[in-house]
Image (cartoon, rainbow, N blue to C red):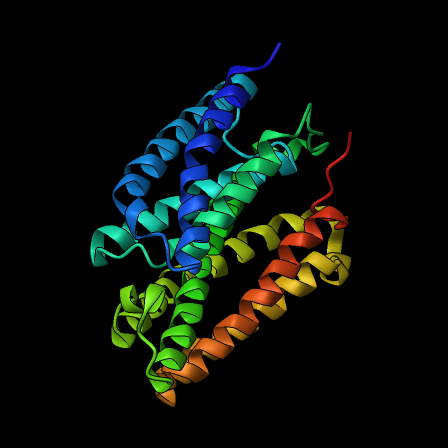
Length: 273
């Protein structure tokens, strides 16, 4: 029999499907008719998603993800929360072009997972682990918004230079607004990511010793952190904005994707049947 958390997650997935459809149609210049329907639909999906996460937490007795499937679900939920924070502040659905497909794919992957494996480590209930996961996932979500803004900036800049403003390009915010969204998301996400890495390092050092630094997940996370640090430094000291900041943010996010994918073969972040 299907569990209720999984049922509510699949209901959320249906509503997220409206967001995916909107993103696909917008990229072809035909998404305007769905704008009024999309926001209420994906907002409803976020509500059902929260219900799924809450019921799963009550069922397992812990708020930390107990599997990769749960991790994907939690990340999708946080990404959607940050999208609505941006939407409330700037009244633009433009980041949804990238946010909605990501949230749908993460939720889909989580929703089709049957009897996911659990962490073998009892440390999952420790305060350090809870802090590590909460901070890291919040950082990932905020930094994805920064990445989405970078792509929007490059798209808008290219269209302005080519003097093309039809279709999706006509509905993108001004370059200054896009740059501000990316910068504010970076300012929010980087401290969360930094503190999350520190909290995780405390546990990893105790559990695995200095060898944890050689884990591919840890190495890629450190490279990601360094790139975001460089991005912040160049914006503060050299005044890097616009195109250069967008390219560096994109590179940092590519490494972040690699760090997330490393969960599947990391010894430090191992899931076992």
